[in-house]
Length: 102
Length: 342
Image (tube, rainbow over all chains, first blue to last red; front, side, top):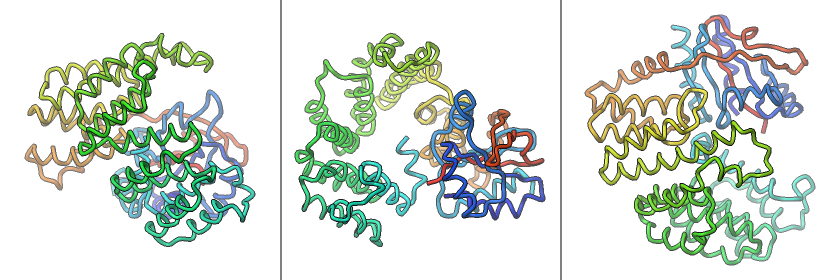
């Protein structure tokens, strides 16, 4: 799972205007709580909304997991990262740096 | 979708998915019967250190327990594993053909027949595909989804006559009325039904277009792609469902319109969950005389031009407090990560 692997990126760049918002698409509240606690995630974690507030599927039409969207300060989605493979931390970090103009 | 998911899964993770699949199909998932050979084999499977070892365990189970209720499920999962993770399509087909007659229940047999359809989706198996389709389907009874599965396999097998024939046969089933009558009790809204009907038509146009492109009829291909683009549902990123932009982009490139082809390929590789398209986009970029080191800048430009604005939302955190995107977003950058605990 990519969430613990992006925690170091959060720690590294949060002081430079970078935030992470994690959303449990399936609303597995207990499972999510355990996971968040076990991995000591420090960024905001939200539950997906229900019925007409299904953010993952109805609004963003997520087609698989994990899916991450990188958004700039003007609210424009510039990068979609789907899946997670070894080495993706570096790929994602390069994109974050680009959005942060580093 | 399966193809898309596949990219995200390393072999080890995929094996966990297999294990999870077996568990999901097992009524004893939360209370393992340690005398059940399936459970014994599964424990060995989970403890195995390599793909080869795991495959040997699965094959041993199939050889030793042909009457086990989970036999068919194991055939299906093992064949998918061979084909998708070990890149052994021949081995997967051989495994299915060896065991398919021994699967007891009709539903699993049907699932495995559809898997075999996908496995035959390769030019080397064009004739096997045609024979298999003739064997498992009654043409008069085929549903739209049956036709679509055949069309996808035939596309992969480059069996263009077969693609065209099934697109024609599926057309009467690709209407709003046909969709409504196929799902009378689902409670879909009229807007959803209308969109689904149009989407079905769009997928057929897309496949007809790609078939035409591969038979050298560029004009017909582009006409069908344009029609498909008008009919297919659009994603959050404004891209049509399916492989339309990849097919369209490749056709434009083949016709000599490299710039237009590059844009289609690049867009679907950026925002279309289409990872096959990235290599095609890179190749086209090179064919345009551009330097490989400039590719990322070109892609970044497209992202800025075509990236949609984020939609504001609000939902609860795990303390029950409602939080919105604008409450939490970063001043310069935000990563919105969709996940679920596994």
